[in-house]
Image (cartoon, rainbow, N blue to C red):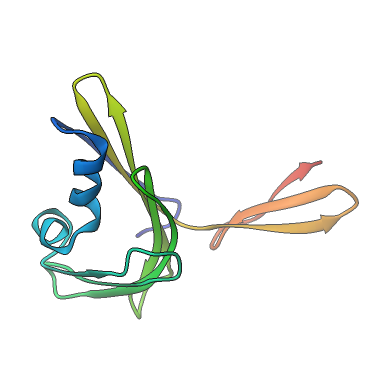
Length: 130
C-alpha cells in the first residue's frame, strides 16, 4: 500500500447479516473473493495468513471480532509496513451491505500539556489540543 492510501470497497448482497457474515469469515467464501489461499482464525488475537494471486503472503492478527457486524485485522508482507483491514456487515432494506476498508494504522502519542499527536506510520504528526 502506498503512502497515505486507503482502499475502500462495498457491495450489497441479497441476504441477512448472519449469512453475509459467513461470506467474510469462512475460508471457502473468502477464497472466492479475497485471495486464493486464506486462513483466518476468527477470534480476537487469531492468526491471519493470506496468499494473493501474485503469490505474495500476508500474515497478521485479528484485532476485533464483533459478529455479525465487524471483523478487523492487521496484515503485512515481509517488505511492506502493516495495514489494517476492517470488514463491516450492515443490514439494509434489500439485504446486507458488506464494506471492506484497508488503511495504514494511526499512532496516537501524548506530546505534553494536553496536546496529542496523531500520525500515520509514515507521516509527520498532526497536533491537536485536548
